[in-house]
Length: 594
Image (cartoon, rainbow, N blue to C red; front, side, top):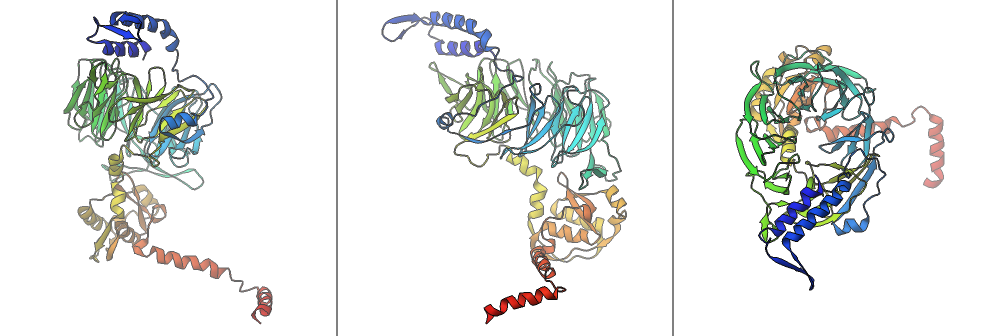
């Protein structure tokens, strides 16, 4: 956004209603407000060509860290700085995805790096495929990081960055895909939107791909496959220019000409489309989402909040000028930037503006200095202004508290996950700053994160179970699902290879437990048939015992067993056969004993 679009509206707001009044500066010079407006317009016209050259994310620089005195003045603390190795000066940071406690950094050369968002440690870096082949895309779920290079989809193991599989997409992408735990959704340049079921591929200890399994809650008869399988494909006849927004059950796309379409992730018939929603304005920025809500802004000066599961418009906010930045949705707030008004903070439930900023004798709902949201704590909102300076805004009142002169950290990173401020440079430098009073990260999507890990909390819940009558594994698991709401699915291919194809019909029984974690019930039950489980998207994936994640005490006896195991190595170390050594040791002790 140009300086003209920032300064002139501010001047107009300051002088609104005063065009015929005279203002006094000092005690001598008299100006009319009309003269001041003309002066400002001339000044901006003169300096705008220089300012307009400023933020370009492909500028290569070697930035210095923010000075300590500036950080103190802004109540900021520099948590860490790190450098992601780059492929020389011709490489640059293309995109940074904040996912959970990770920063996933994608560069122009196609390199991906995983950085711990709380410590700055570079955990791994990987470059699948050929470098500089085409504009790459990046997305991730809890299991893998997915990179698209030159119409080839690569799956990288999230823990180690190793390639698990690659797949040639049937068409070029028009924008970045989105992914959940089961499927990846690819918007294509031929207007098609395709859902692919993801394979469940396990890595061996040496890093090579091992067994694989199609995983889906809707398909219990999974078969062997090491590549994604098309689940559904629809010709939308839309310009799919923006990354879709997703909820647990739905997918929503909007187009530059204001057309919106929603699709069921798991349709019950051949047509996944669920509803259409269209507006009269053009859409120039991507939408964003939180839970089942999609937020998209238009050139008609409105921000729309739409429930993509049922098609209902929750609210609409009129900004007064076209929406110029992608909206940012946090747990309680939505931040939206409009072309002339600046950055506004809205109540996410109602769409009501939360700020009343005194400017020129009036109260306004947006901060005219702020242009791009970066992060927010419970006290402050951090943003960039029109010339790239970091500004600190009082979160409650919306007034600017201070600013940091622009630095060579020219790559802004929008953080919707926590309160941490991340800035980067194209030499690979990344810095993390935060409110001096918040040593522990404030997580803005805690409710969504908790919902995603609900099964883990449930498995840690203490329960009381009486010894049950024998029954088939399938029937006993179904009974537990009724009582606790834990879904399950059989890893058919892995079980078949382990000779456990008939596991569902094997006879098992629940053993009595009292005030033990629910996971111990499942562990003891499955161990009877030499099986265990993996947790996949709030579902237990039943697999052979040697493939299972059996963390936690088994039947509540883990700690005792561990202690017994710890004593064994000590007994094994006794030199029973070396009698000479024993004799020498006894001789050495005799003088002391005497």
